[in-house]
Length: 157
Image (cartoon, rainbow, N blue to C red; front, side, top):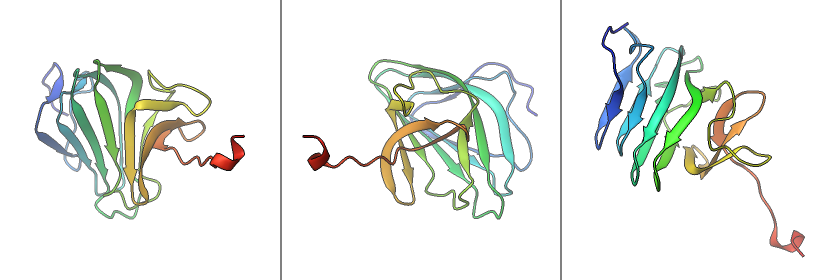
């Protein structure tokens, strides 16, 4: 465990966290200002933080990418449920390098900003092996996944 204090800030660059040998300080908030945070956990472990995403900087697009490096076991990144975002900021959650179907980002409760019956995060997208769509928090598994809801125009008469 690192002993530094203060925020872990990623602005316009990439921070790759390989959790095979250590962790960030548990009191450190993750601040994204247009950068990419990659959690590379190739051994199917859980990074149980829970991290506060504080803030998503106004007017930026940030990414959290989860990679299990083809691990046989699921990899989980646990985030806190308080997500602070600046105006016009967006977040992409990228699962394209998380080949284990059980690898997800989770939050113990619906993150700040989740709305409606599907707990949609309108400012966030999820990209997985089958496409890109709106992010939503899934009750039960507590995971952030791609919303997979189809509505046919013929049904909307």
